[in-house]
Amino acid sequence: MKKGLLPLLMIVLFYSDSVFMTFFSENAFNGAYVPVPRFFLIGLLFMSVFFDRNTAVKYGLLFGFLFDMFYTGLLGAYMFFLPLIVYVTSKLTKWLQSTLFIFFIIVLFDIALLEMMIYGLNVLVQRTEASFEQFVMIRLWPTLALNALCYILFAIPLRNAFQKFKIIFG
Image 1: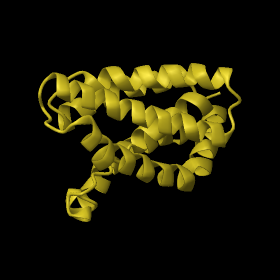
Image 2: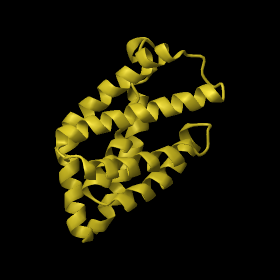
Image 3: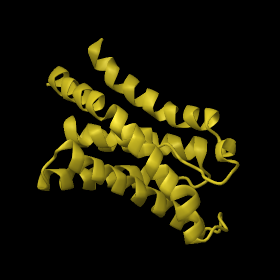
Image 4: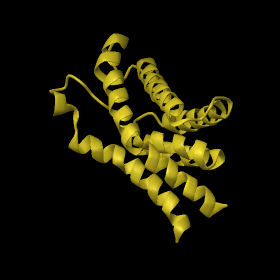
């Protein structure tokens, strides 16, 4: 029973991104800012550091594919970028001292990196007309602020949950 909680947590985080966007749409700031929740990515990063990197990479592949299918028109973007970011982050945190503050900086960097890679891909396939400056002001900064707040609120519960999962899964 307890082993079923890990997939359940990741499914909840996956759907929380879209549920948050439904209730907190682009019209929240009259279209001036578009904060994008990356709660699932934050959960994946916690999984890679405090549980198991290989499991996090597998979840990144699976849910990246689902994210591409349901939310984007670019099949393969998230399926490639999520596992890559998870893998690099898990290696980086082994090299750096893994305190929650340092991990906070790494998570924000990863979110910014993902946002910029997706923006670059959209520019490449001509799916956006926003300049890089517009992207940074309208989407990147609000996204980082929203996810920083989420990290501050949920870092300790997520760390504790993944540490317990590590004990359960042995």
